[in-house]
Image (cartoon, rainbow, N blue to C red; front, side, top):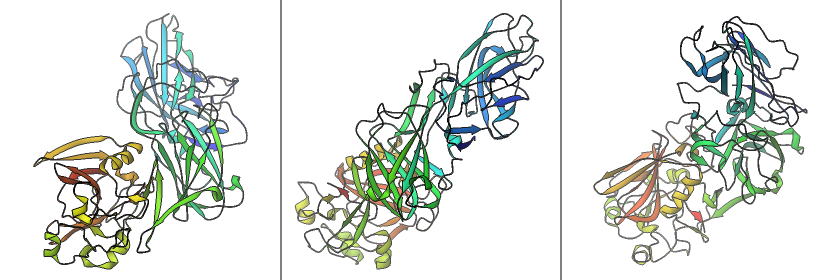
Length: 535
C-alpha cells in the first residue's frame, strides 16, 4: 500500500508510470526526464489539474517497493512486439523501488502503426481479468489506524483512476513513444483533530448517505468528472452509513486538538442534515452532531474536523434492579451495548427465576434463569429469558407477562423489523435463506461489526471482528426449550425479538464460527439474551 505523509502544504500528485523497469513517481516535476526503453510504451503521469490540485489536500503519497501494483488497460496496445499477442487487459505493474519516485516492472507494446491507442489505469491492482468497465472496488466501514497521528492505513484505501488518454502510435512500432497518465482520487479523507481527556480508542461517523461499501465495481473508462465531483459507480453492495476508525494503540487526549489526529476514508457524499460523530473514550461511546460542509464531502479533498470531547454525550440507562447499562447510537436507533440483567419488569413486578428444569420446560409465562444457574455468568453475559417475558403482542402479552415491559422505562424489546433496521444501516446483505420444518432462517453477512472483538468472552475470534458499531454482542449461550440443559456459552449469542413467524418467536443469532447474523423462528421456551432499544 502507499505511504501517506501529512504536510502543511498542498502538493501536486504526479504518477509517472514507465512500463517495464521504468521510472514511476507520484511527486514528479514537469522537468523529469523520461527513460527511453526500446520497443516499450513509455507511460508517465502528472497531476490531473495543476491549478485546483485533485490530490487530497495536504496528503503526500509514495510508492512501496514490490507491494504497490497498478492495473492498465488498452484495447490497441499489445502483449508482444510487432503488433502480436493480445490486447492489454488489467496488466499488472509492480513498484520496483520505494519512495515518491519508483521504477515499475511490467511490459506492453504498440499495436498497429499510426493508430489511436487509448489507455486506462487504476490503483490498487485487483487480480484476475475484470473488464475495464467493471473493476472491483470497495471501502471498508471498519478501518484500523495503528496509533494517533499515523496515516499508514490511508494508502491501502486510496483508490485512484487515471484520466483516459489517447495517443497515436509511431509509424515504427518498435520505437518508444510517451503516454502521460494523470491519476484522480476516488474517495475523501477526514482528519479528526480531537481534544479532551482520557484514552481515545475509536472514532466513528454516521450519516444519512452511503459512507462505505463491502463490494462494488467501477468503470475506469468513464470520463473524469469535474474536480470535487464524484465518479459514477457501476455497482455498490453491502452499503454502510457508518464508518469507524479503530486505534490499535489508544491515544491519550490533551487540551490541544492538533495533538491527536485520527484519519478516515469515506465515500464522497452530501448527507441530509448533520453527521453524528462518535468517540470511544475509556471504553465508553460518546456522541455529538456536526454540520456537513457546504456541498457535502467532495471527492479528492481532505477535510479537517475539530472535535471537543467535552461536547460529546454518552447514552446510559438503568433498570429497576439498579443495573446500569452502556448504550450506543447506530443510525436512528439507540441500543443497549450490554445484555439485560433485570429480575423485574419495569413496574417492579418480580419475574420468576425458574432454575428447576421441569418448571422451565412447562412455563407459559415470563421467567428468567442464570446460565447453568450460576450468577457469575449473568454478571458478564446477562440473564436468559423465555419469550413470554418479552412478549409485546396485543393478543397474548396479558397472558404471557401481564402486559408488562421487561426493559427500562422509555426502552423496549426490539421487533424483528427493528433488528433489520440495525443490520440494514450497517450494510448487511442477505446471503441465503433455509427453510426447515416450515421455519425460515435468514443469513446476513456483517456480524464482525457487532460482535465483541478478541477472546475475552468469545472462545475464538478472527481478525475481521472489530465491533466497530460498539454493539458488543456477547456469546451468552442459551437454555434449552424444555429446560434440560444450557448450551454454547462462549460460542454463540441469541437475542429475542417480539415478532412471530408461523406462530413462533423470531430470535437473532451470532456465532464464533463465522461472521453471519441469523434470524429464525423457534420455541417460546428457549432461554435467550435480551437487548433493549430506546423508544
